[in-house]
Image (tube, rainbow, N blue to C red):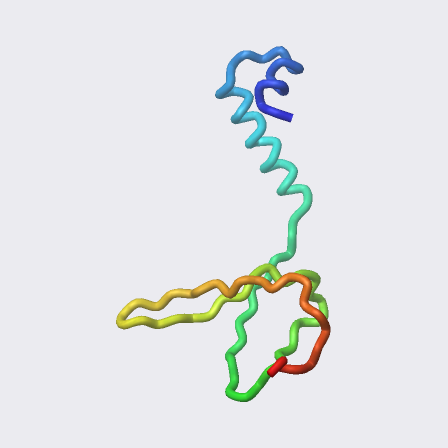
Length: 92
């Protein structure tokens, strides 16, 4: 549903008021259902292919690698691979 449709259904003509009401509604919904997002850090070891995850983990949101170039340190995101076959080979 578009914002204009919502305004027509409620009979409200003030777009600023409708936007602020929507923001408050989303904040209220977020406060009712809280996600338990936990960040975890792991060090990469040489010649180690598999790493363990916590038992209560439901979804892996993203993987980042600490990257240092000169005096700056950044975290670079590793793209997700979708539809991976369960093969325990390097494919070489």
